[in-house]
Image 1 (tube, rainbow, N blue to C red):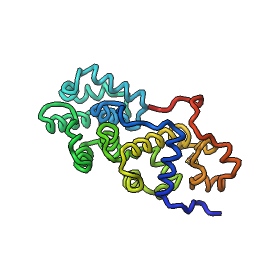
Image 2 (cartoon, helix red, strand yellow):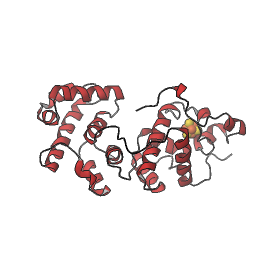
Image 3 (cartoon, rainbow, N blue to C red):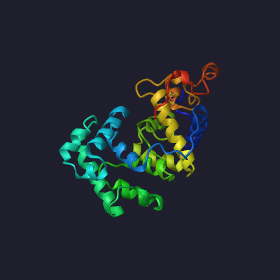
Image 4 (cartoon, rainbow, N blue to C red):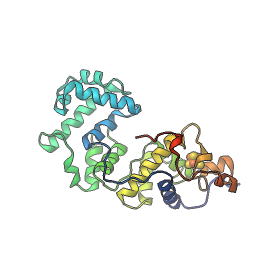
Length: 254
Ligand code: SF4
């Protein structure tokens, strides 16, 4: 029995988008979840840290030092102490201050990222990823969510699902996934936002790292992981698969 479906990866990627866009609520671009500064600094704080601990660190930092100028001027050890709910506060504190320093230098003294609106995607991506602690994922989140640039954040959930389904090779890195998935999808910020968020939700609630809940998954008809573990999806399995996320299963992550 084959262990991978023959359909081309790009077809799977588009099918994934169409199916999850129906399974979950489609999102619009008009409501960024956070300001650009908050998205950038929170994403640095979130590395291997729960959302609750990231928020706690963010709030404590601004309560302790008042504003971004205060965070930049604070003794680095004190800043590390206020963000101690994150995984690596001693590493993140100097990084945050360096990021603030570079933003201030770019704007001539202020703390905002408005200049990214006018910059071409490549210029913005290069400027952001040149800063310590900011990789492709963080830069893409800021550019897509806040500035509606056509980029795709690939977090651990998007990466895992792309590998399991066969949208990318089984050993492709997250950075490679970023490039390949972006080539497969239209350069439409709305599609990219929905693709990212829906796969993030799917990975958080159904395609879990340790034990994917494949019975509930609408991607089973073309997923290589499903084929390898259960064989081709049967008519019974397909009929038993819900076609919508049921709110009774719990809230979706932020
Ligand atoms: S069928 Fe299973 S492994 Fe494949 S995407 Fe769905 S939950 Fe993940």
